[in-house]
Image 1: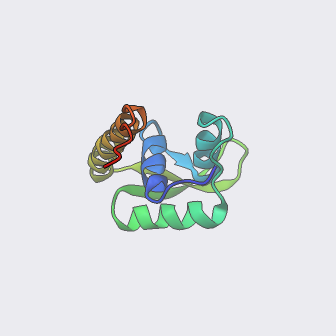
Image 2 (image 1 turned 60 degrees about the vertical axis):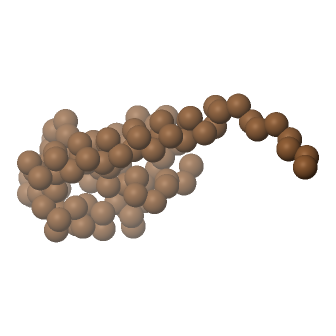
Length: 112
């Protein structure tokens, strides 16, 4: 499934709201949470992580993984938590509005 424009940031922010994670773990969480419907390509994920870091919404630091490899771990900043709240509110409003239109009774034919 192709992601809608603007969804990647909120998905990354939401994923990092639990604990610091490296990029692969972010990608894996989103894939698993969506039952494999959403798959992030490296070419989209890592530029997005750098963009969010430049905005001050996340911060990254190099750490050693459980397997002994070096990886950049990202965590949400206070600014990022605030942005996550804004993004989630906007998406919930958007989804509710879409559902309202999709479930609304269809208009009767108006032949004038």
